[in-house]
Amino acid sequence: MKRLFALIVILASGLALSAAAQTPVAPAAARQAKVAVIFLQKALDQTNEGQRNYADLKKKYEPKRLQLDQLTNEIENLQKDLQAQGGTLTDAERAKRAKTIEDKKKHAQRFAEDTQNDFQQEMQQQYSTLAAKVYKVLVAYAQQQGYTLVLDGSQQQSPLLYLNPATDITKAIVDAYNLQSNVPASPVKPAATAPKPAAKPPVKH
Image (tube, rainbow, N blue to C red; front, side, top):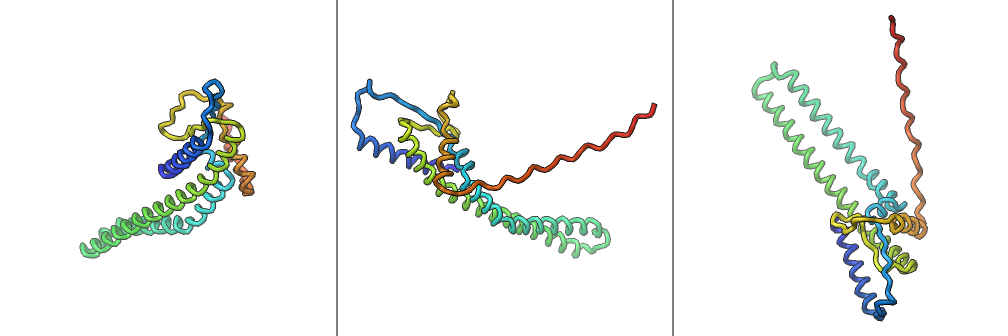
């Protein structure tokens, strides 16, 4: 996510320079700082578009996850067979089966790493695109509300030591972006019913 936040910093720097070049400097007494805070990562995750994109991405990679599960099960079965039949096999056959298992383990590991890297790369691309669009909504909202400074509280090195909840505009930005994007909210899945505990047999005295 470092690239994502770097993108936001670059955009913010460009806005600040543009505003400084176009806005005349007002007397100190006339300037009143109005500060807001947004948890940008949280905002991106909570937008309807962000949730939809993540769900679509997980669905896209579901076949690869199942393929990895199949490889894992296959390796486990080969290991069990080798353990069960090891005493009846020749040294050559045992070595051959052990090598087959090791090769499949390496293949499964490479497959898992490649899949994870591809997934992370696509997710970052989605976040970067979404962040640029949410940022535009953030700028418009901040200007409309008269904020002179908006801080991102989700960064690890955030300078925030105290936050008045009234200054947190995360939900406002999420709502504003959802309204603009016209992406409907994902349907809420019903919560699974917790199983009832089994009745205890009566204690005999």
